[in-house]
Length: 279
Image 1 (cartoon, rainbow, N blue to C red):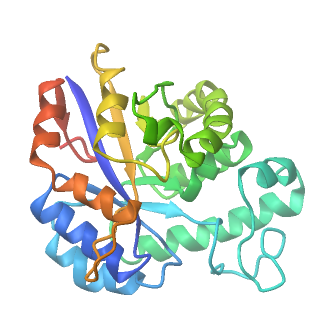
Image 2 (cartoon, helix red, strand yellow; image 1 turned 30 degrees about the vertical axis):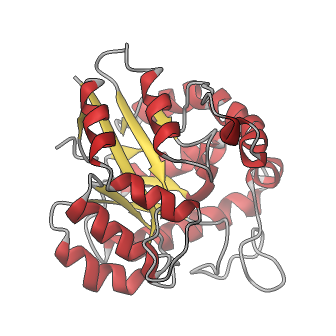
């Protein structure tokens, strides 16, 4: 049986994100969410949302992409003491000893903050920066040490949504080289994860169309791998449920969690919609 996990990222980023997780869980097919340890609405996510989502599988979004660190790290922050790295910059500096030491220090603080609040079942990162092989091995080591059983291996089959608004979009064009680079690390990362005894996904949906994910992008991504049996595919979304009338892509990603026709379409492709506990 093919398994599909729709994972809401950056849980705890804002009240809008928290509301999207709550509504996506209660009224849609969101069964997993990833906590943002340094999110402004982290405490609300723990105290107000999780008690209403008893069967939600909770993970952690390790975050060194933006915001403030939980520790006094300096090699991956700017003069304002905010994170200031992206995939390319981090890949170029990761072999520096102080960078890896700072990453481990910060990751431990983020993991421990989340574990002190709730059970953590899966681990990944904002912008999938943990896909960089040196960082991926560090995260595997920490996942093993802290008994976190699942780690995301970013790995997406190349596909094109036959729609002008998707393929002519600047975000789609800029995502292609990043997706290619991330995919080039996937085979090695899968081997490392298995050496630690961690459970992994086979594919993700949400790299090439990051920032422009919608129903069509999700459906086409699942269709191209639907002929393969016994796989675990993970859809990555960043939903927000606004009280005001906004229709940005975060709002569109929230709407797809409520789409019963999309849920039925996924089931017709043979996917069992589960959480990271595979339930």
